[in-house]
View: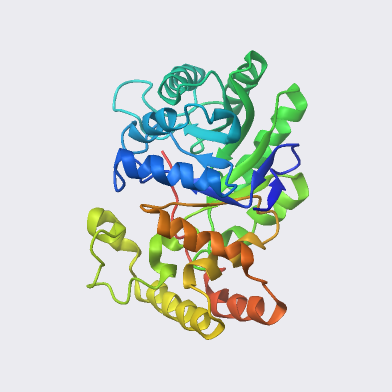
Length: 323
């Protein structure tokens, strides 16, 4: 396994990280624990979850599975998206964040998280309030680093300015949809992150499975796939996305790679990317993605991927999550 620093921080994270959105939903508890242990055994140390994944089951399963292994991982979780419909059930107010952090720590069976991320920008809470609450969490020892998610470039830049002015801890990373099927971060987010030393953590690196080659057309979702288990996912199965998936599959086959490994390898080599989080519902999927580390992204291969995905620089984002 290869490791990068997370932005300009001193924290080292594996180039390939494990996303756990499927834990407790598309992967049962036993399978999820097996995937997590398999990842750790192969040097993956970045484990990403959230307070709302599979209800709260993802965090609970991880907490149980990490017993005796907590010090082997960089554990990241999030809060801010809708937890419930009660007052203060969402957002990045001090009230909500402190409540959710304590609940996450209990489910994860740990007294600290390595990276606490705001799941999306909250237009109803002053950034000063959010950042002061996060600063207090770091000073208390319950959080080690802080990150953003689903922030626009200007929103992160404003947060960094406030942190500098108020002497608060600063965001070291940001999560965003980024893949061959979504290169919109390259317009503003990537240049800003390079300039300010913020590490990018792409989610949906395989465009929800479209870049794996398993979706050939909109009406033929494989058994057990995200499109079958989550009807809302079908909105992503647009022809231009499917066509890109076919082109990536053809290119990968011509070089003897799987389309998944090739797509992840391309993303790992993009500027400012610190770690790429991939999900899995079985260990075999994780093994395939680990092969991305072996791919030499030479100029010709990289250039071909750049070319076939160029229209997605100015397309609409593949996914955004806001409150």
